[in-house]
Amino acid sequence: MKTESVNELAVRAAWDESAREELIRQQEQNILRMASRASYRYITKSDDEWSIALVAFSDAIDRYSPEKGDFLAFARLVISHALTDYHRGRSGGLQEVPVSPFVLEGNADPEEEEDTGGVYLAVVEQSREASDRSMQDEVIAANEMLAEYGFRFYDLTECSPRQEKTRMQCAAAVRALLGRPELMKELKRTRKLPIRAVENASGIPRKILDRYRKYIITATLLLEGDYPQLAEYLKFVREEGKT
Image (cartoon, rainbow, N blue to C red):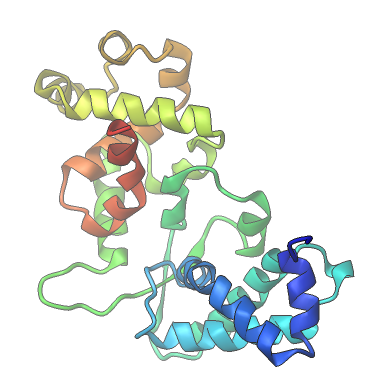
């Protein structure tokens, strides 16, 4: 028996309530991720954004047709637009920072970058619980830190790894730096990536290290410093080191 695709299930879900419930159940984690990307922070089911994303996802089911292409891509746009409207309606809820922190994850979706409206993206300010800094605070602090190295956080839009292989190579370079105090000391002293030393320590080609040096420096400093929220986008660096 042929397994029903997501697109086919979405078409049936427009008139079949049981199919709608099944599709939502299957895509629950995907909806949370879409909501998180649209809100630039991690969303859980206890957040208002979850309810808004859920309604938008259901709306996407009602509006979807095969001519619109991939259903999940279409749903992502509907959720993004719904949450953008929600955030704009909140008094003082938006702050402008140079770039989406999702750029740290690499493998950016070109269509998604276009949909967000360019480099200057609105980031929703997270609640300040205990002594946690908001995402904006971390980006501002990161900008100030990286200025000492001759670039800014928003420069990452042009120098983040897009391919999985390159992403893994950059991660290996970051681990080589973090695991060697002498290299970290050299990085902070010169404000430059010690390319030859990192090449010897990691085995990553010099041309990769040179091309992605800004990304490698940023990832290293964020993971080594006090940037807990931004570091969440770089957890793959440590995870890949365990494989």
